[in-house]
Length: 153
Image (cartoon, rainbow, N blue to C red; front, side, top):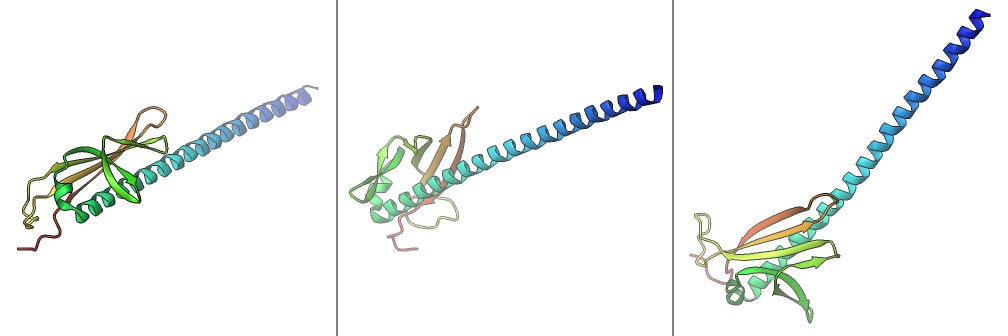
């Protein structure tokens, strides 16, 4: 009789140990899937922020090409706004998709050795920020624009 109760005790211990290992494996899998999902969402937000920043750089470039003297006179923080089918720059930043904040900062830049053009360059810095669950994140793109209608040296 003693050997039967010992075997039953070992069987219960084996079942409990197996259940504990299974619970541990399942919890690790669930945590991994949740982390992967969060990472994927964060990557999608970063891609969208990059698209918005590139769009603002392109709009700034198009505006500078269309009317350099007007564009070069701007300094400060702006955002693009679509008016009658054309983009213009309005003061301040704007909210996109009720989530991202976009601003374009324009300032004169000192000519450097690689800019041998006759025009003073304008530094264009686009900042896109967004709030994740705990702290805000942002990306920033900077480019320099010059008067492309002037003849070269």
